[in-house]
Length: 90
Image (cartoon, rainbow, N blue to C red; front, side, top):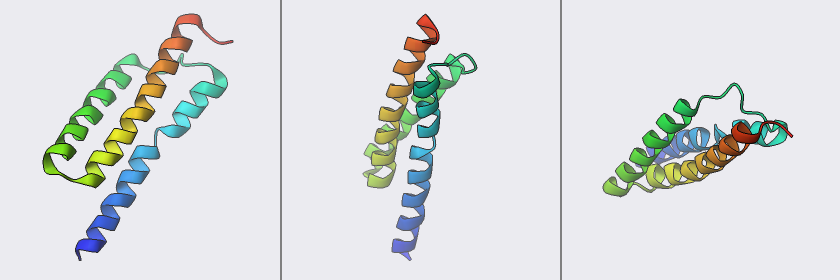
């Protein structure tokens, strides 16, 4: 039964971790972030950071690794957001 829950947690972690990747790709391709909210990025970054610390505290590799990877995704998104928000498309 433990293996089943590990599989469920791993699939859930993969889906949520990679769920933001399409948005990052879209920002990069279109060089447009006009309809995105800086507050959403800040809130999401804070939440994922806390989940990362929580996973570390629990010693749970699924929670820890998935949120650490998500932090990387978010950092790329934040850099793109700042870059394209400042100078606009093109």
